Image 1: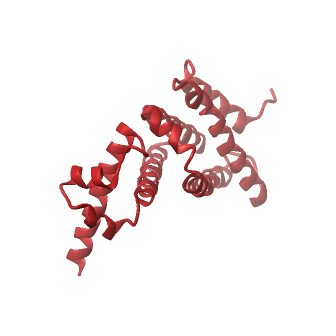
Image 2: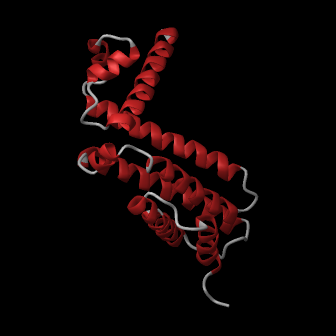
Image 3: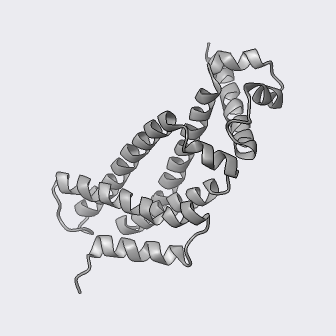
Length: 200
């Protein structure tokens, strides 16, 4: 039974990896279940055992991208010595991932906006997960005296504002496909303002 589960996990991973490559290359609409099956060297019917539709495969690809980003963030913040450095590393990881996504085909970028149902659910999960992650960093900073005392409601509010601010930093990438000059310095400065405030 365990061996069967492991085999299924390998097949699912192969489907997601293959579909991701095809979606990035030719877009969502032009990629068919047949294309994915052929690239895998499998019969199209075998795909339906794992995913009922191409939309389900696309959603699985997006969830895999999200999980990979979270793994990268956890690895990066694990190397930081302070809570402030963790916030900087968190933001840098998000922008780096976004810069990779901006290299998607124009077809796929335009189609993502049309997939409202999938994207709405994904954004909601993304925001909830990232607010909780930033909240944890803030709580740690308060505990170790790095940040000033905040009650739980305020910590959650600040975490939400930070995640929203980091999303705003990504706008130049989404609009032009290119980072602003010295984006790393801008990240450091913005985290400084968030943590230290604007008082002298």
